[in-house]
Length: 633
Image 1: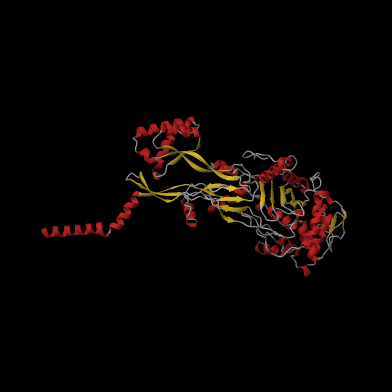
Image 2: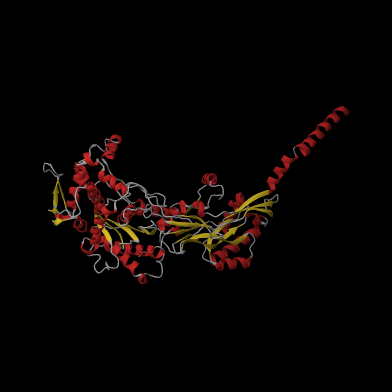
């Protein structure tokens, strides 16, 4: 028995030595892990500023009422219920519909997150903050947190985008894997569209991270260290000019309101940029949305109503709206024909109101007409552009196709691509469309991939004729169209449109990245071929199709090269377009306006540009205050 006892004591002593000596470091780590926790606090998001430094998206401190489970757990049940009743009285006095029962339910659910107080009321009044501070209710606090604000309401909504919340642990883990420096958690704000999304990594601040010691009841005893200090996100300075942005929005909204009495115009867009740099000064898509409604979170019914809106307020029509170019495409056809030597600028064409294809047998597809069948008589290139003679350009479209043996079967399409059509511009916004420049090859490819939907793989002369006036399967975005006219008046130089001027450090204000203008490379456009086209476009607002809208406009002070367009869309009323640039010879502004189902370009889209340019020339007439959120004009 003594021997057995000795052996047992020897085993116990050996085990004790193994636990206390050999495995001591491992156990110390486990024990430390049981009493050390990591707590994170959010940092302010970087601001989005206009070209003059005015805040488009900023931050403010909001008060949140929070419930601290661990402090409330120290109270007996009666005392805790008394705290809930007192807090509910103060909340009710501040018109917050939160009852004592609600607080009790929140307390019961908060056991799983005892280290972080639970928000029970958001964005409460200063008066409630003072009242609760005076009551000093244990476990009920009011804290200040940063909150995204948009001081100018809906202005530039499609540029800025909106915020959402990190949905769950899976999304948080994915974001932390891709961007470990910013530590995402479920519920954290994150950019979902626009610049808020594209520059999420720059805008998001670095949260404060603290290591704290907790006791056996999981209560914080002390802060051990600040592992990572809080740092606000970087500020982004845009090329957008708030005055011009508001002016463009008001101009477009006023015209939509006027048109709705007679036509089904419900949506439109306008973009303005600097031809010399590509800097976008205004970008408007209507209908739009108020980004502020997403900050505090939307209810399911509100979200369903917004996203189910048939007018699609979240579609950025400037970069993702696809439209036939209509007659605004004619300068491209003119350039292709001049380059091919098909006709000189001074060659006179007899416009008879309609055009019959060469060698066509006289069927329904043989004859193409001007709008309304109007007969214009003798026109040269200048008059054909200013008066928008379709037959002049029908004939050029046919010749470009018939002479494909010499010019290639994509002569017109190649020219369109040189002006930037058929490819994204590269502007710093997610979701930009490339548009579409149809070709014989694309027609064959569509047939090969889906012969049921595209039974005929052939390209016909009529397809080239339609393309010559911007119809058929051609699709462009308003931004592409504005960039075309920027190139026309800039001797062919085409800049990449841009919205961001620079990113600066959110603490020091020092530049982090500066975005320089970028000239697109590719086959050069000849200034001598563009000059006669510009001459024709200069006549459009003076004696051409936009003259009624520009009556009384100071063309001597602001010579404007522009073109109206009316695009036919299957199953819908005509779309109105107007694009141009000025003042010549040193243009500082190129623009495009599109109004869906607005009718003729000269009657619906041109007036928008006129209102806008009047404001540019007379800034003293601009409204000093932005519109109230949700209100246009």
